[in-house]
Image (cartoon, rainbow, N blue to C red; front, side, top):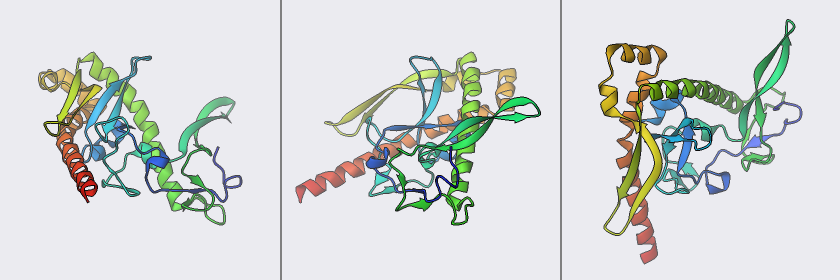
Length: 244
């Protein structure tokens, strides 16, 4: 558990790169950040083979270890997914006795084996006198969003499944006559079934806050073309560098 005594000199490296685990084709995302995510990335769903539960992912590239948003330590987007921004931190729970009743209280924990953890470079977690740094306050806000998003996801996917709104999709991307990619295991919102919902179902989704999420997922599909353009630019730059 994070505390300002044990971790007084803790720092976190905030640049991006493969050495920090950022070279991935998808990252988890949550309904609580859909509005920001859909401006930059396509949002898809994946189904866990073991549990059968769905979760949301932002697509970053067309191969398993391809993140088209990475470039020389920078992340080429105005919004970076919360699961990336949180770095080595996560929400854990600790039991507290409140009036004789044991309650699970969320607390910030830190993974000291995470590659972003440092004692010599990066953002300070605590101020010299022990208070939270602005960086830690920001991370705490991100963690609250992730925690709320996990709970919202379960209810949202239950509602989507009940109404038959989730459909599998095969993403076939053709960049040239010689090069193409097929991304499998993805699901999305069935636009035809969404449009055909009756008034009562629409009202129920809207009151729960899930209707906007469905439309944001649909709207995010336009970013697939953006990823294709980014891939083609990187490919052209690699060809040009090789030819020199």
